[in-house]
Length: 454
Image 1 (cartoon, one colour):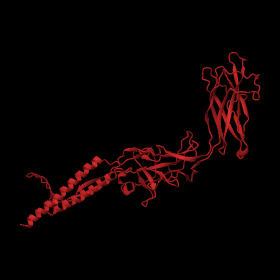
Image 2 (cartoon, rainbow, N blue to C red; image 1 turned 120 degrees about the horizontal axis):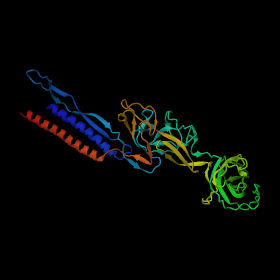
Image 3 (tube, one colour; image 1 turned 135 degrees about the vertical axis):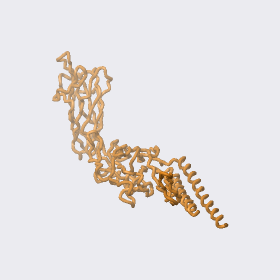
């Protein structure tokens, strides 16, 4: 009779713990990145009244006679299934579309802590944070982009807290330095039916005699200090060489100029087009299709040195059938200084700064952590985990989308993976199990009372 009482008590305690876990799951149904827990039960040791005996030639085998002594909690498991994704539209919100954990610093337990919550923010000092903890990753990409324009971070380095505003590798990242203009590429079509300059005879320099140009291409260029200047490339049809009637060659005169009082630019030249309207690049001496012009700042801008710009006219044509679109600048480099205005986070974790001059540059790369047994991590509150003896060690960060991790999705958050319908069902089962175990106690008590009353 006493064993029944103790079994009932163990059942009450176990179901109470089960209800505690269920209630915690339900309480965290809206917690970002929360992973629900599950209680697993196991029976306690059984009292063996008699052991099992094997069969003989004259008698069959007999099973052991055992009476269970109750129930206990075998484990409380963390279910690391990925939660649904919620769109927030906030550029600093990030979710992991698979395995992996964000790495943070700032806690009192161990050097690093780990979380699935990606509701990041930037504090007044520029630290990328979540819940007051600093998000870790890499900051060193060598300072220069690759040939394809991408940036490759040194992910073999130990992770460190990410600062959006500055770091030891890149200095002040709130301002992007100006870059002088060095090259411009032109494309478009000049009207082949334009009249030849009336004063042109052969390849005379007509620059001083042209009253009106056929086309003008405008562009903005920058010096090393970020000062901007508006310059024009003016075009004039100047000569048609009919020496070979089967292949007449047309010469166009170009001239660089600027109305800015603080800039001196005096450059001009000629280009040739064949009978098909294609530019001729085989005579770079007299008809240079890739000339270089020199611009000399003056006045208030005189503190910056003269700078050269390479012009590329090889994509200019004079097709008769083409629309007279004129000549435009298809590519030009150089820009003024810019201030950091916003950030974006790529699927690989690279944080890109967006500046007021429409330029971008990388600010850091978010690292992820993977474990051989993520269910073995220990919860330490505030959405954080730390390693345990059964989770496996943290061996360094890996880039999102590699090493078994999922890619990142900016502007979204991972929701809790708690299934309310399942939790309510488990709660009802736990309630009935608790009632049944309490009934064991009252029934055993009544039987003891009957025994005492005999």
